[in-house]
Length: 296
Image 1 (cartoon, rainbow, N blue to C red):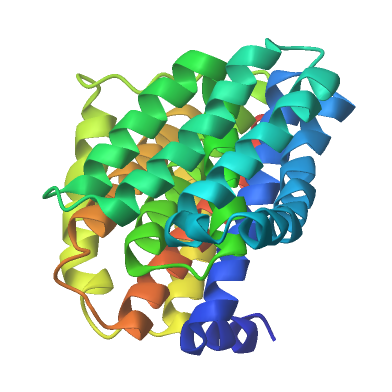
Image 2: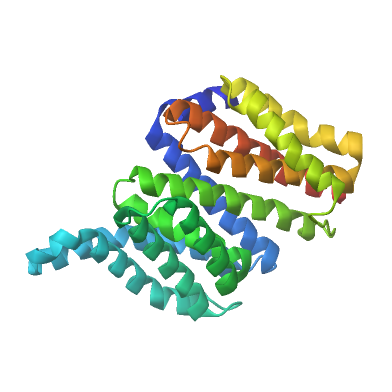
């Protein structure tokens, strides 16, 4: 049943997009649980952004009816209405963090999406990812990165997703999901350091290169990708122990995310790329569930 669902996501780009949307919402909620001790408002905020996005379209249409000339800049109008509507909600719901900084995360997501759709800069997806991660973290820790992602998803939901926005959102989703993995370990009461000089980190990164070339760039089926995701985390922990196995697993995942981001231009076929993305997300999902349970 799980594999049949995965095959459906693989064949339907729209279903694939909404599956990523669901993953992003759950990730943001988990970050709120890990970082803010389960604060109800922090958990609810990403879902409020989704509700705000629903209200944007009728408001934007009303403005266009009053001033038809604005229709040429409908993307700017949608983003502006969304960011303005998010401001009072942010100040009302933010109790455990700075509301202004949280609102800046929302604005950052909207601005990044607009920049991606209008810019012709080379490597703009990677540059956008760097900006979102660094500024999102400065504004609201890893939860801020999750809010930036939800802001981008919410705006993309209003308008049809372009290739530019979809790819950037996919990359950021993988990064946010990895931050969930790291925070889930800390939430379990353990501290695992990923230091560049650690031989297990180096081994994990090198292993990711081998895995990418030998597994992920071949004809990877959903069944095979799911099997890998289910087997790798417990195998690493059994063979190398809790701490070293987790470090090796984390480094492997980072390497695969980097390879997936770097391999965008090479793999233009939607089915191939969707399979790769799903397999990495499944690997992260199993790790998020399994590793904290083992540490507890």
